[in-house]
Image 1 (cartoon, rainbow, N blue to C red):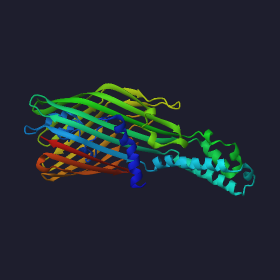
Image 2 (cartoon, rainbow, N blue to C red):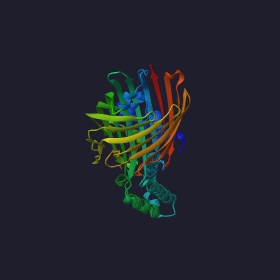
Image 3 (cartoon, rainbow, N blue to C red):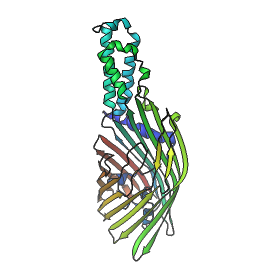
Image 4 (cartoon, rainbow, N blue to C red):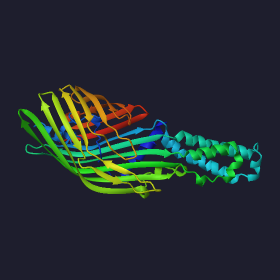
Length: 415
């Protein structure tokens, strides 16, 4: 797949933010920790930790000031089979098949060696080949964004946070009867007279979700037996937009996935919470829980098909070892990541490292894996720049199996 095609599929996910005027989701996008294998429950900074674990908000030092993230963004795509373009291109083969049938003289099909017979045979064979190549194939794209204002305070640390994620999945149902029918026409072009392309049954599916959160985080640090323990909670308004694009595969266009005709929305309440504890000067352990209230939201029914999006508590544990020069981190999900009921669940673990050779420069790397083997394992990396320790620019990228790649960026300012 060339770079232009990849960006067009990424746009399927990214465009949902525009469609939903997004602002958060079932996860987070935070460029520094995304570059460190997607970790952060124990290793994130106080200014961005509110996107991951609200307890980290209370880890601000006495000289830390208000931090504004404007914004953090990231996106990821997996499409090893170039499905997005193949499923769009199949309409060209359908149109060619229909054109051949429309312009042919049925009498010419009585002669299997005629030009008309050869045209019909080739057109039917091409369409059957395309259908066969789509069986069992899927493509996935994700995107995330976040905004936060973190305000340290001696009494109670507070942050205003908005975060969003979009996920899109393109798949197909290929009816073997369609392939058999077209193979029959390929072998005996005369049989095309009794075949109406409108009767073919294969379908294309586009599922997409945006979950958008608007919350206020509060956190406080306590001393428990000489161990600094931070607690944080983020009550939030949660808006969800779901898209159920279900059409004949012969009319499929991924540009239509985010059309309002296939969308419904829902608004509710949810809560994130977290805890973090420091052991000595170098060790931090953390536990975060996102979306502590479960919610099931049905898509709009389209062509007799309906799906359900599942919002479930996502509990993640993390540990970090840190000095002025180096930070090492590891996170692991204790619960599965849910999504549409029609999709497989995932459960992630990640490890990462950051080295700060200069006051204004950080270099990061990591690895993230799905222990359920339903999502691609990826290597991550990135850099961070902090001129004057007031403006922070973080960049990240990832690459993994199944032609998975992604990128992210974050700008934060400390006042």
